[in-house]
Image 1 (cartoon, rainbow, N blue to C red):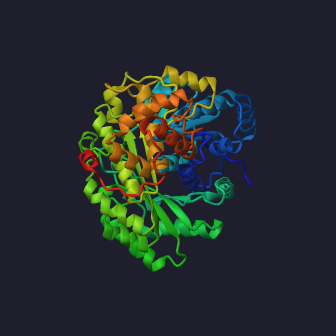
Image 2 (image 1 turned 135 degrees about the vertical axis):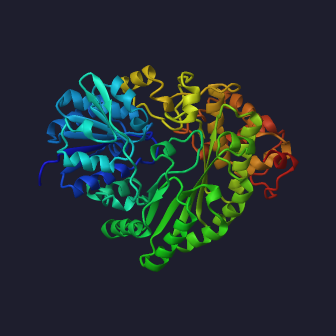
Image 3 (image 1 turned 45 degrees about the vertical axis):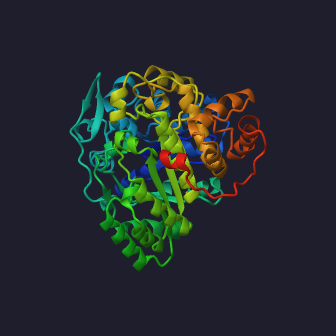
Length: 540
Protein backbone atom coordinates (compact mmCIF):
# COMPACT_ATOMS: atom_id res chain seq x y z
CA UNK A 1 0.00 0.00 0.00
CA UNK A 2 1.53 3.36 -1.03
CA UNK A 3 2.48 5.85 1.67
CA UNK A 4 -0.04 8.65 2.25
CA UNK A 5 0.72 11.90 0.44
CA UNK A 6 -1.89 13.84 2.40
CA UNK A 7 -2.64 13.79 6.12
CA UNK A 8 -6.02 15.18 7.20
CA UNK A 9 -6.33 16.28 10.82
CA UNK A 10 -9.36 16.75 13.07
CA UNK A 11 -8.16 18.78 16.10
CA UNK A 12 -9.60 18.25 19.59
CA UNK A 13 -12.81 20.29 19.58
CA UNK A 14 -15.29 19.64 22.38
CA UNK A 15 -14.80 19.70 26.14
CA UNK A 16 -12.91 16.54 27.16
CA UNK A 17 -15.52 15.90 29.88
CA UNK A 18 -18.47 16.04 27.47
CA UNK A 19 -19.91 12.75 26.27
CA UNK A 20 -20.02 13.95 22.68
CA UNK A 21 -17.73 14.10 19.68
CA UNK A 22 -17.16 16.47 16.79
CA UNK A 23 -17.17 13.92 13.97
CA UNK A 24 -14.76 14.67 11.04
CA UNK A 25 -17.44 14.53 8.33
CA UNK A 26 -15.89 17.34 6.28
CA UNK A 27 -12.52 15.57 6.24
CA UNK A 28 -14.07 12.28 5.13
CA UNK A 29 -15.70 14.18 2.27
CA UNK A 30 -12.32 15.64 1.24
CA UNK A 31 -10.90 12.16 1.69
CA UNK A 32 -13.42 10.98 -0.89
CA UNK A 33 -12.08 13.60 -3.32
CA UNK A 34 -8.51 12.44 -2.72
CA UNK A 35 -9.48 8.80 -3.09
CA UNK A 36 -11.23 9.49 -6.38
CA UNK A 37 -8.05 11.21 -7.57
CA UNK A 38 -5.86 8.28 -6.53
CA UNK A 39 -4.04 10.20 -3.79
CA UNK A 40 -3.14 8.02 -0.77
CA UNK A 41 -4.47 9.69 2.38
CA UNK A 42 -4.55 9.22 6.14
CA UNK A 43 -6.69 10.86 8.84
CA UNK A 44 -5.70 11.70 12.40
CA UNK A 45 -8.68 12.30 14.68
CA UNK A 46 -7.34 13.96 17.82
CA UNK A 47 -10.89 14.76 18.93
CA UNK A 48 -11.52 11.04 19.43
CA UNK A 49 -8.05 10.55 20.94
CA UNK A 50 -8.58 13.25 23.58
CA UNK A 51 -11.92 11.72 24.57
CA UNK A 52 -10.50 8.22 24.91
CA UNK A 53 -7.36 9.32 26.78
CA UNK A 54 -8.71 11.93 29.18
CA UNK A 55 -5.54 12.73 31.11
CA UNK A 56 -3.33 13.65 28.16
CA UNK A 57 -0.67 16.23 29.05
CA UNK A 58 0.99 18.70 26.70
CA UNK A 59 4.19 16.66 26.84
CA UNK A 60 2.38 13.44 25.93
CA UNK A 61 0.40 15.07 23.13
CA UNK A 62 3.53 16.73 21.70
CA UNK A 63 5.37 13.42 21.79
CA UNK A 64 2.46 11.63 20.09
CA UNK A 65 2.27 14.29 17.39
CA UNK A 66 6.01 14.23 16.82
CA UNK A 67 6.01 10.45 16.40
CA UNK A 68 3.18 10.75 13.90
CA UNK A 69 4.72 13.57 11.88
CA UNK A 70 8.18 12.03 11.81
CA UNK A 71 6.74 8.67 10.76
CA UNK A 72 4.43 10.10 8.09
CA UNK A 73 5.47 10.41 4.45
CA UNK A 74 2.76 12.98 3.78
CA UNK A 75 3.87 16.17 2.10
CA UNK A 76 0.58 17.99 2.81
CA UNK A 77 -1.09 18.35 6.22
CA UNK A 78 -4.66 19.61 5.96
CA UNK A 79 -6.24 20.78 9.22
CA UNK A 80 -9.99 21.43 9.49
CA UNK A 81 -10.92 24.25 11.88
CA UNK A 82 -14.07 25.71 13.36
CA UNK A 83 -14.22 28.38 16.08
CA UNK A 84 -14.03 25.91 18.97
CA UNK A 85 -10.90 24.09 17.76
CA UNK A 86 -9.12 26.93 15.94
CA UNK A 87 -6.49 27.51 18.68
CA UNK A 88 -5.69 23.80 18.80
CA UNK A 89 -5.53 23.66 15.00
CA UNK A 90 -2.89 26.39 15.11
CA UNK A 91 -0.97 24.63 17.89
CA UNK A 92 -0.88 21.46 15.78
CA UNK A 93 0.14 23.45 12.68
CA UNK A 94 3.02 25.05 14.59
CA UNK A 95 4.24 21.70 15.89
CA UNK A 96 4.13 20.13 12.42
CA UNK A 97 6.11 23.00 10.93
CA UNK A 98 8.77 22.75 13.63
CA UNK A 99 9.18 19.03 12.98
CA UNK A 100 8.84 19.11 9.18
CA UNK A 101 9.59 22.63 7.86
CA UNK A 102 9.29 21.45 4.26
CA UNK A 103 5.74 20.16 4.71
CA UNK A 104 2.82 22.16 3.32
CA UNK A 105 0.38 23.09 6.11
CA UNK A 106 -3.09 24.10 4.90
CA UNK A 107 -6.00 25.19 7.09
CA UNK A 108 -9.60 24.98 5.97
CA UNK A 109 -13.08 25.16 7.44
CA UNK A 110 -15.44 27.87 8.63
CA UNK A 111 -13.09 29.71 11.01
CA UNK A 112 -10.00 30.25 8.84
CA UNK A 113 -12.28 30.84 5.84
CA UNK A 114 -13.72 33.88 7.62
CA UNK A 115 -10.27 35.35 8.41
CA UNK A 116 -7.80 33.99 5.81
CA UNK A 117 -5.58 37.08 5.60
CA UNK A 118 -5.36 37.47 9.37
CA UNK A 119 -4.57 33.77 9.83
CA UNK A 120 -1.64 33.86 7.43
CA UNK A 121 -0.37 37.24 8.61
CA UNK A 122 -0.26 36.37 12.30
CA UNK A 123 0.73 32.70 12.15
CA UNK A 124 3.73 32.24 9.84
CA UNK A 125 3.73 28.44 10.20
CA UNK A 126 0.49 28.24 8.15
CA UNK A 127 1.27 28.06 4.43
CA UNK A 128 -2.22 28.44 2.99
CA UNK A 129 -5.93 28.74 3.80
CA UNK A 130 -8.57 27.03 1.67
CA UNK A 131 -11.47 29.48 1.66
CA UNK A 132 -15.03 28.19 1.71
CA UNK A 133 -16.06 25.03 -0.10
CA UNK A 134 -12.98 22.89 -0.57
CA UNK A 135 -13.84 19.98 -2.89
CA UNK A 136 -13.19 21.66 -6.25
CA UNK A 137 -10.23 23.59 -4.87
CA UNK A 138 -8.67 20.30 -3.80
CA UNK A 139 -9.50 18.65 -7.12
CA UNK A 140 -7.75 21.44 -9.02
CA UNK A 141 -4.72 21.35 -6.74
CA UNK A 142 -4.46 17.58 -7.21
CA UNK A 143 -4.35 18.08 -10.99
CA UNK A 144 -1.39 20.42 -10.44
CA UNK A 145 0.46 17.81 -8.38
CA UNK A 146 -0.24 19.26 -4.90
CA UNK A 147 2.79 21.51 -5.30
CA UNK A 148 3.51 24.58 -3.22
CA UNK A 149 4.11 26.67 -6.33
CA UNK A 150 0.66 25.99 -7.81
CA UNK A 151 -1.30 27.05 -4.71
CA UNK A 152 -1.41 30.73 -5.68
CA UNK A 153 -2.90 29.91 -9.09
CA UNK A 154 -5.98 28.13 -7.71
CA UNK A 155 -9.25 30.00 -7.03
CA UNK A 156 -10.39 29.84 -3.42
CA UNK A 157 -6.94 29.97 -1.80
CA UNK A 158 -5.01 32.46 0.34
CA UNK A 159 -1.30 31.68 0.21
CA UNK A 160 1.92 32.91 1.76
CA UNK A 161 4.45 33.88 -0.91
CA UNK A 162 7.65 34.99 0.76
CA UNK A 163 6.69 37.75 3.17
CA UNK A 164 3.48 38.61 1.31
CA UNK A 165 -0.04 37.16 1.38
CA UNK A 166 -1.75 36.43 -1.93
CA UNK A 167 -5.48 35.75 -2.07
CA UNK A 168 -6.71 34.30 -5.35
CA UNK A 169 -10.06 34.80 -7.03
CA UNK A 170 -13.22 33.59 -5.35
CA UNK A 171 -14.16 29.93 -5.66
CA UNK A 172 -17.74 29.56 -6.88
CA UNK A 173 -19.95 27.11 -5.00
CA UNK A 174 -20.78 23.76 -6.51
CA UNK A 175 -24.13 23.77 -8.25
CA UNK A 176 -24.75 20.05 -7.84
CA UNK A 177 -23.61 18.46 -4.58
CA UNK A 178 -24.06 15.02 -6.11
CA UNK A 179 -20.83 15.79 -7.97
CA UNK A 180 -18.94 15.29 -4.70
CA UNK A 181 -17.41 11.82 -4.53
CA UNK A 182 -18.69 9.55 -1.78
CA UNK A 183 -16.98 10.25 1.56
CA UNK A 184 -14.08 7.91 2.25
CA UNK A 185 -15.33 6.21 5.40
CA UNK A 186 -12.32 3.87 5.36
CA UNK A 187 -10.21 6.74 6.74
CA UNK A 188 -11.91 6.44 10.13
CA UNK A 189 -12.53 3.34 12.19
CA UNK A 190 -16.24 3.89 12.72
CA UNK A 191 -16.41 1.06 15.22
CA UNK A 192 -14.28 3.16 17.58
CA UNK A 193 -16.99 5.84 17.54
CA UNK A 194 -19.63 3.18 18.15
CA UNK A 195 -17.65 1.89 21.12
CA UNK A 196 -17.17 5.40 22.51
CA UNK A 197 -20.92 6.03 22.51
CA UNK A 198 -21.70 2.56 23.80
CA UNK A 199 -23.72 1.60 20.75
CA UNK A 200 -25.76 4.82 20.63
CA UNK A 201 -23.69 6.45 17.89
CA UNK A 202 -25.76 7.80 15.00
CA UNK A 203 -23.70 8.22 11.87
CA UNK A 204 -23.62 11.61 10.18
CA UNK A 205 -24.72 12.03 6.58
CA UNK A 206 -24.18 15.40 4.95
CA UNK A 207 -27.37 16.01 2.98
CA UNK A 208 -26.79 19.60 1.90
CA UNK A 209 -25.38 23.04 2.66
CA UNK A 210 -26.49 26.60 3.06
CA UNK A 211 -29.18 28.63 4.81
CA UNK A 212 -30.90 31.54 3.01
CA UNK A 213 -31.88 33.39 6.18
CA UNK A 214 -30.22 36.40 7.82
CA UNK A 215 -29.82 35.80 11.58
CA UNK A 216 -27.31 38.31 12.99
CA UNK A 217 -25.37 35.75 15.07
CA UNK A 218 -24.95 32.94 12.54
CA UNK A 219 -21.73 32.26 10.63
CA UNK A 220 -22.96 29.25 8.66
CA UNK A 221 -24.75 31.39 6.11
CA UNK A 222 -21.44 33.17 5.44
CA UNK A 223 -19.57 29.93 4.69
CA UNK A 224 -22.21 28.81 2.18
CA UNK A 225 -23.17 32.33 1.02
CA UNK A 226 -26.85 31.91 1.98
CA UNK A 227 -27.14 29.45 -0.91
CA UNK A 228 -29.46 26.55 0.01
CA UNK A 229 -28.40 23.32 -1.73
CA UNK A 230 -29.19 19.66 -1.17
CA UNK A 231 -28.02 16.36 -2.54
CA UNK A 232 -30.55 14.34 -4.47
CA UNK A 233 -32.74 11.90 -2.50
CA UNK A 234 -31.08 9.03 -4.37
CA UNK A 235 -27.59 10.18 -3.38
CA UNK A 236 -28.58 10.67 0.28
CA UNK A 237 -30.08 7.19 0.48
CA UNK A 238 -27.04 5.74 -1.31
CA UNK A 239 -24.80 7.03 1.51
CA UNK A 240 -27.19 5.76 4.19
CA UNK A 241 -27.40 2.33 2.58
CA UNK A 242 -23.64 2.05 2.14
CA UNK A 243 -23.08 2.80 5.83
CA UNK A 244 -25.81 0.37 6.85
CA UNK A 245 -24.39 -2.47 4.76
CA UNK A 246 -20.77 -1.86 5.80
CA UNK A 247 -21.22 -1.04 9.50
CA UNK A 248 -24.80 -1.85 10.47
CA UNK A 249 -25.99 1.72 11.09
CA UNK A 250 -29.76 2.06 11.07
CA UNK A 251 -30.28 5.66 12.20
CA UNK A 252 -28.57 8.75 10.81
CA UNK A 253 -28.05 12.39 11.74
CA UNK A 254 -28.64 14.51 8.66
CA UNK A 255 -26.11 17.34 8.48
CA UNK A 256 -27.82 20.44 7.16
CA UNK A 257 -28.70 23.60 9.12
CA UNK A 258 -32.22 23.66 7.71
CA UNK A 259 -33.20 20.45 5.97
CA UNK A 260 -36.80 21.62 5.49
CA UNK A 261 -36.14 24.94 3.73
CA UNK A 262 -37.60 23.64 0.46
CA UNK A 263 -41.05 22.08 0.73
CA UNK A 264 -40.61 20.61 -2.76
CA UNK A 265 -37.36 18.88 -1.82
CA UNK A 266 -38.77 17.43 1.42
CA UNK A 267 -41.72 15.91 -0.42
CA UNK A 268 -39.44 14.50 -3.13
CA UNK A 269 -37.18 13.00 -0.49
CA UNK A 270 -40.13 11.44 1.32
CA UNK A 271 -41.48 10.00 -1.93
CA UNK A 272 -38.07 8.46 -2.65
CA UNK A 273 -37.73 6.99 0.84
CA UNK A 274 -41.25 5.55 0.70
CA UNK A 275 -40.46 3.80 -2.58
CA UNK A 276 -36.91 2.64 -1.81
CA UNK A 277 -36.26 2.38 1.94
CA UNK A 278 -36.69 -1.38 2.22
CA UNK A 279 -34.26 -1.49 5.16
CA UNK A 280 -36.49 0.90 7.17
CA UNK A 281 -33.55 3.20 7.93
CA UNK A 282 -34.41 6.20 10.12
CA UNK A 283 -33.06 9.73 10.37
CA UNK A 284 -32.97 13.00 12.31
CA UNK A 285 -32.74 16.52 10.94
CA UNK A 286 -32.69 20.24 11.79
CA UNK A 287 -35.47 22.64 10.88
CA UNK A 288 -36.58 26.20 11.34
CA UNK A 289 -39.95 26.25 13.02
CA UNK A 290 -41.48 28.20 10.13
CA UNK A 291 -40.25 25.71 7.51
CA UNK A 292 -42.36 22.81 8.77
CA UNK A 293 -46.02 22.15 9.55
CA UNK A 294 -48.01 19.24 10.93
CA UNK A 295 -48.84 17.81 7.52
CA UNK A 296 -45.22 17.79 6.43
CA UNK A 297 -44.11 16.43 9.80
CA UNK A 298 -46.53 13.50 9.46
CA UNK A 299 -45.19 12.73 6.00
CA UNK A 300 -41.59 12.88 7.21
CA UNK A 301 -42.39 10.60 10.16
CA UNK A 302 -43.98 8.04 7.84
CA UNK A 303 -40.74 8.04 5.83
CA UNK A 304 -38.31 7.51 8.71
CA UNK A 305 -38.00 10.78 10.64
CA UNK A 306 -37.31 10.12 14.33
CA UNK A 307 -36.02 13.43 15.67
CA UNK A 308 -35.88 17.16 14.90
CA UNK A 309 -33.67 19.95 16.20
CA UNK A 310 -35.34 23.38 16.34
CA UNK A 311 -33.25 26.50 16.92
CA UNK A 312 -35.60 29.18 18.26
CA UNK A 313 -32.85 31.30 19.89
CA UNK A 314 -35.24 33.57 21.84
CA UNK A 315 -38.70 33.28 23.38
CA UNK A 316 -39.33 37.02 23.03
CA UNK A 317 -41.32 38.25 20.05
CA UNK A 318 -39.49 41.56 20.22
CA UNK A 319 -36.09 39.87 20.16
CA UNK A 320 -37.13 37.65 17.25
CA UNK A 321 -37.29 40.83 15.17
CA UNK A 322 -34.07 42.29 16.62
CA UNK A 323 -31.95 39.24 15.76
CA UNK A 324 -33.68 38.83 12.37
CA UNK A 325 -34.91 35.34 13.14
CA UNK A 326 -38.59 36.35 12.81
CA UNK A 327 -40.23 33.12 13.97
CA UNK A 328 -43.95 32.79 14.72
CA UNK A 329 -44.42 30.99 18.05
CA UNK A 330 -48.09 30.18 17.43
CA UNK A 331 -47.16 28.34 14.22
CA UNK A 332 -44.71 26.14 16.14
CA UNK A 333 -46.89 24.85 18.98
CA UNK A 334 -49.04 22.45 16.89
CA UNK A 335 -45.83 21.04 15.37
CA UNK A 336 -44.32 20.46 18.80
CA UNK A 337 -47.50 18.85 20.10
CA UNK A 338 -47.52 16.52 17.10
CA UNK A 339 -43.86 15.64 17.72
CA UNK A 340 -44.89 14.56 21.21
CA UNK A 341 -47.82 12.49 19.90
CA UNK A 342 -45.51 10.74 17.42
CA UNK A 343 -42.86 10.27 20.15
CA UNK A 344 -40.32 12.12 18.02
CA UNK A 345 -37.13 13.25 19.74
CA UNK A 346 -37.69 17.04 19.61
CA UNK A 347 -34.88 19.34 20.75
CA UNK A 348 -35.16 23.11 21.07
CA UNK A 349 -32.32 25.58 21.56
CA UNK A 350 -32.16 29.13 22.90
CA UNK A 351 -29.50 31.84 23.19
CA UNK A 352 -29.29 34.35 26.05
CA UNK A 353 -27.23 37.52 26.29
CA UNK A 354 -28.10 39.58 23.20
CA UNK A 355 -27.04 43.21 23.88
CA UNK A 356 -30.59 44.44 23.21
CA UNK A 357 -32.11 41.92 25.64
CA UNK A 358 -34.00 43.16 28.71
CA UNK A 359 -34.98 41.12 31.76
CA UNK A 360 -38.47 40.66 30.39
CA UNK A 361 -37.02 39.14 27.21
CA UNK A 362 -34.91 36.71 29.22
CA UNK A 363 -37.92 35.82 31.34
CA UNK A 364 -40.00 35.20 28.21
CA UNK A 365 -37.31 32.91 26.81
CA UNK A 366 -37.10 30.76 29.94
CA UNK A 367 -40.87 30.63 30.37
CA UNK A 368 -41.34 29.62 26.77
CA UNK A 369 -38.72 26.92 27.19
CA UNK A 370 -40.57 25.63 30.25
CA UNK A 371 -43.81 25.68 28.28
CA UNK A 372 -42.20 23.68 25.47
CA UNK A 373 -40.95 21.14 27.99
CA UNK A 374 -44.55 20.74 29.11
CA UNK A 375 -45.64 20.26 25.50
CA UNK A 376 -43.15 17.43 25.07
CA UNK A 377 -39.73 18.74 24.04
CA UNK A 378 -37.17 16.03 24.83
CA UNK A 379 -34.24 18.37 25.48
CA UNK A 380 -33.72 22.10 25.66
CA UNK A 381 -30.34 23.78 25.29
CA UNK A 382 -29.35 27.25 26.43
CA UNK A 383 -26.17 28.92 25.32
CA UNK A 384 -24.64 32.31 26.03
CA UNK A 385 -24.36 34.55 23.01
CA UNK A 386 -21.04 34.40 21.19
CA UNK A 387 -19.90 36.79 18.47
CA UNK A 388 -18.58 34.58 15.67
CA UNK A 389 -16.09 36.06 13.22
CA UNK A 390 -17.59 37.52 10.09
CA UNK A 391 -21.13 37.95 11.43
CA UNK A 392 -22.83 41.32 11.71
CA UNK A 393 -22.90 40.79 15.48
CA UNK A 394 -19.10 40.41 15.42
CA UNK A 395 -18.56 43.48 13.27
CA UNK A 396 -20.83 45.64 15.43
CA UNK A 397 -18.95 44.76 18.65
CA UNK A 398 -15.37 44.24 17.46
CA UNK A 399 -12.91 45.62 19.99
CA UNK A 400 -15.27 45.24 22.95
CA UNK A 401 -14.80 41.54 23.78
CA UNK A 402 -13.91 40.68 27.39
CA UNK A 403 -11.92 37.77 28.78
CA UNK A 404 -13.85 35.31 30.89
CA UNK A 405 -12.79 32.76 33.49
CA UNK A 406 -15.96 30.73 32.99
CA UNK A 407 -16.04 28.35 30.01
CA UNK A 408 -17.69 29.61 26.84
CA UNK A 409 -20.75 27.66 25.67
CA UNK A 410 -19.44 27.48 22.11
CA UNK A 411 -15.72 27.09 22.88
CA UNK A 412 -15.44 25.54 26.35
CA UNK A 413 -11.92 24.14 26.27
CA UNK A 414 -8.35 25.45 26.39
CA UNK A 415 -6.72 22.04 27.01
CA UNK A 416 -4.28 23.71 29.37
CA UNK A 417 -1.71 24.43 26.66
CA UNK A 418 0.26 27.63 27.37
CA UNK A 419 0.51 28.51 23.68
CA UNK A 420 -3.24 28.13 23.20
CA UNK A 421 -3.97 30.40 26.17
CA UNK A 422 -1.39 32.88 24.90
CA UNK A 423 -2.79 33.27 21.38
CA UNK A 424 -6.38 33.48 22.62
CA UNK A 425 -5.35 36.35 24.88
CA UNK A 426 -3.23 38.06 22.22
CA UNK A 427 -5.79 37.88 19.39
CA UNK A 428 -9.33 38.40 20.73
CA UNK A 429 -10.54 39.39 17.27
CA UNK A 430 -9.59 35.94 15.92
CA UNK A 431 -10.84 33.95 18.91
CA UNK A 432 -14.01 35.85 19.75
CA UNK A 433 -15.88 32.64 20.62
CA UNK A 434 -13.66 32.35 23.71
CA UNK A 435 -14.66 35.83 24.88
CA UNK A 436 -17.62 37.47 26.57
CA UNK A 437 -19.72 39.92 24.56
CA UNK A 438 -20.46 42.77 27.01
CA UNK A 439 -24.06 43.57 27.80
CA UNK A 440 -25.08 47.15 28.69
CA UNK A 441 -27.15 46.02 31.71
CA UNK A 442 -25.97 42.59 32.87
CA UNK A 443 -22.50 41.62 34.04
CA UNK A 444 -20.51 38.78 32.52
CA UNK A 445 -20.94 36.81 35.74
CA UNK A 446 -24.71 37.37 35.82
CA UNK A 447 -25.24 36.19 32.23
CA UNK A 448 -22.91 33.20 32.46
CA UNK A 449 -24.57 31.94 35.62
CA UNK A 450 -28.10 32.71 34.45
CA UNK A 451 -27.57 30.60 31.32
CA UNK A 452 -26.50 27.61 33.39
CA UNK A 453 -29.33 28.16 35.88
CA UNK A 454 -31.88 28.30 33.05
CA UNK A 455 -30.54 25.07 31.58
CA UNK A 456 -30.70 23.28 34.94
CA UNK A 457 -34.14 24.67 35.79
CA UNK A 458 -35.76 23.78 32.46
CA UNK A 459 -34.18 20.34 32.14
CA UNK A 460 -33.97 19.39 35.82
CA UNK A 461 -37.13 20.78 37.45
CA UNK A 462 -39.52 22.01 34.72
CA UNK A 463 -42.84 21.06 36.33
CA UNK A 464 -41.83 22.33 39.76
CA UNK A 465 -40.51 25.58 38.24
CA UNK A 466 -43.81 26.25 36.45
CA UNK A 467 -45.78 25.42 39.57
CA UNK A 468 -43.61 27.79 41.58
CA UNK A 469 -43.93 30.64 39.09
CA UNK A 470 -47.70 30.26 38.90
CA UNK A 471 -48.13 30.08 42.67
CA UNK A 472 -45.61 32.72 43.72
CA UNK A 473 -45.83 34.99 40.65
CA UNK A 474 -42.04 34.97 40.48
CA UNK A 475 -40.09 35.48 37.25
CA UNK A 476 -37.12 33.35 36.15
CA UNK A 477 -34.66 36.23 36.57
CA UNK A 478 -35.93 36.98 40.06
CA UNK A 479 -35.76 33.30 40.98
CA UNK A 480 -32.17 33.23 39.77
CA UNK A 481 -31.31 36.34 41.82
CA UNK A 482 -32.53 34.52 44.92
CA UNK A 483 -30.90 31.23 43.97
CA UNK A 484 -27.40 32.51 43.16
CA UNK A 485 -26.43 33.90 46.60
CA UNK A 486 -27.99 30.88 48.30
CA UNK A 487 -26.02 28.50 46.03
CA UNK A 488 -22.84 30.49 46.67
CA UNK A 489 -23.37 30.27 50.43
CA UNK A 490 -23.62 26.48 50.06
CA UNK A 491 -20.54 26.24 47.82
CA UNK A 492 -22.50 24.82 44.89
CA UNK A 493 -20.65 25.14 41.53
CA UNK A 494 -23.91 25.01 39.55
CA UNK A 495 -22.48 27.32 36.88
CA UNK A 496 -20.06 24.62 35.72
CA UNK A 497 -22.11 22.06 33.80
CA UNK A 498 -19.13 19.73 33.75
CA UNK A 499 -19.47 18.97 37.46
CA UNK A 500 -23.07 19.91 38.32
CA UNK A 501 -25.66 17.51 36.93
CA UNK A 502 -29.43 17.83 36.58
CA UNK A 503 -29.84 15.24 39.33
CA UNK A 504 -27.66 17.23 41.71
CA UNK A 505 -29.62 20.38 40.87
CA UNK A 506 -32.94 18.70 41.64
CA UNK A 507 -31.81 17.95 45.18
CA UNK A 508 -30.26 21.38 45.71
CA UNK A 509 -33.28 23.19 44.28
CA UNK A 510 -35.61 21.48 46.75
CA UNK A 511 -33.44 22.62 49.64
CA UNK A 512 -33.38 26.13 48.19
CA UNK A 513 -37.17 26.26 48.00
CA UNK A 514 -37.52 25.02 51.56
CA UNK A 515 -35.01 27.49 52.96
CA UNK A 516 -35.68 30.58 50.84
CA UNK A 517 -39.07 30.52 49.11
CA UNK A 518 -41.51 28.59 51.32
CA UNK A 519 -42.10 28.30 55.01
CA UNK A 520 -43.43 24.77 54.59
CA UNK A 521 -42.63 21.89 52.32
CA UNK A 522 -44.51 21.51 49.02
CA UNK A 523 -45.35 18.32 47.11
CA UNK A 524 -42.66 16.85 44.92
CA UNK A 525 -45.04 16.70 41.96
CA UNK A 526 -47.54 19.51 41.28
CA UNK A 527 -51.13 18.27 41.30
CA UNK A 528 -52.26 20.58 38.51
CA UNK A 529 -50.92 20.32 34.98
CA UNK A 530 -49.45 23.48 33.52
CA UNK A 531 -51.99 26.13 32.64
CA UNK A 532 -50.58 29.63 32.07
CA UNK A 533 -51.76 32.08 34.71
CA UNK A 534 -52.18 35.78 34.10
CA UNK A 535 -48.46 36.29 34.73
CA UNK A 536 -47.22 33.57 32.36
CA UNK A 537 -49.78 34.47 29.69
CA UNK A 538 -48.60 38.07 29.79
CA UNK A 539 -44.98 36.99 29.74
CA UNK A 540 -45.04 34.46 26.90
